[in-house]
Image (cartoon, rainbow, N blue to C red; front, side, top):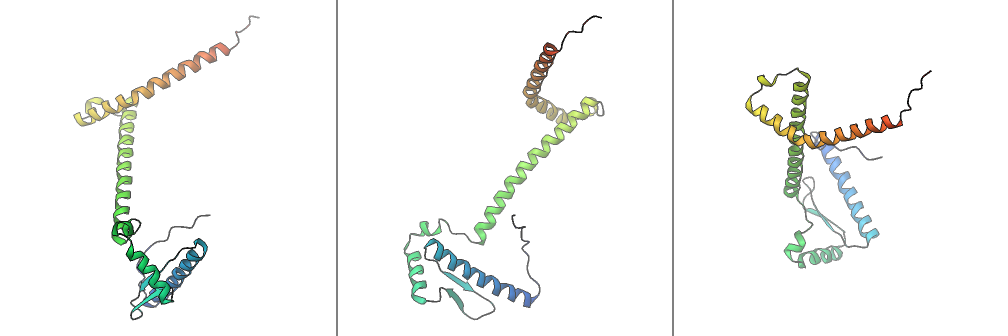
Length: 174
């Protein structure tokens, strides 16, 4: 069962915020330890805190930390930044993803409105004479896009009707 999405919001209560930070910091260290043990990789973390002076590093062994940090710094900047993510890049990714979703929804909504207008025109609820030129053009383009689907549906219905007539037994005279 998937977890529910966590609502990210600033924790107003200072004590609760500090407690949450400490728990998450320990959890992060645990995950790093598991990752380095299970996957056989070297990992490190630098944690800045407004609750404690200075910074905290993991692993606590300074030489292991220095080895990982030096290996990272020895790589070319392009290779270092390849999979790196920060708050700005994450926000930009999310914005572009949501932008794409919005554009897709706009197209879907536009098609729905055109289909609704077409349905209302065909049912007689809306008169074509009452539509402006933009609506008429939209309706014409929508009908043009739907025409191949309509023709295919007519073929299917005709072939089904023909097939059902062939299968129907002739009535016998009594």
